[in-house]
Length: 404
Image (cartoon, rainbow, N blue to C red; front, side, top):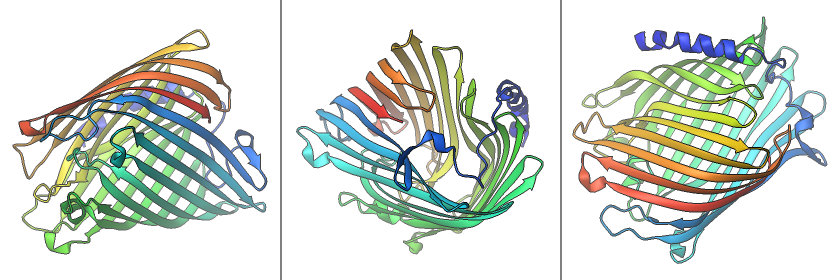
């Protein structure tokens, strides 16, 4: 807890910086601002179309036991946020995204990603109920085994209560159930290691302190049951995450949450994890043309390798975006990450990423609608104490975004 208390001056300083906003953030018992959406009959939407990484990838397979294979590639993405009103009270918010990544020569590696989620909210004056649903189908390279590319099926369902407690305070209390299924014909052990269901409860309390800024306290308690019970991976997971949400539209925006977490495996031979976990993503606008974006994460995750059970991941990301006038801009960024494996202490993986790009912004309005082009080069490198895992990857690509 000493580490958490040491962060309080940072939280207080950020709170003061963010306090000048005039508009409070969204009330969970009220639908979002209708003016931010296009109307398609009974449905309101914020659509966008993006083309990313149209260029060359010099390490398509990311394998460490074979020479690197390069290919021309590109990703086309369509996404939209939706809002549907049901009478004067209930409303549905949802979002969906569909990606297609293609390779010119290594066509067997082309794939689709599909993401869909939504929440139905039924307000009853200062009280309400909600139901959540998500269904995602995507390719994933496990962070601890990047040379695998696995088909993942992720489904989530949840429900609970929304409470307006007065004095600028609201709360959300509910249950959630999430399941993951991993399918990799080249490596069936990944499914045996990671197929699981997490069931439990979650609570979130928010207090609006100044302007857009809210003080958060989030707690969750999950029981983790793996499909391969004989592997002894079942566990309980607990997190308590105080934090700040700065809202959107101000000089400072984003969210910071950090606090104690604990993973207790059922197998007596597997040591528990106890430590600080959390994540942050904040953006600070220095002036009309410069924005700094910082991200960080510290969390415990289940490992793809059967012998490791779980690992601790730490990552830090910093990006600067500067526009010279209204149209032309540049971006520079870098990231570092580290994976530690308590059951395999001789293994430590370190990752670095560097990127640089040129932007051409043709249009952007106050509602977030924009047309923008980007040419960017990104270089990744992984160095491990187990040297056979070392590798690097560089992608030079063009991108475009049209919409919200």
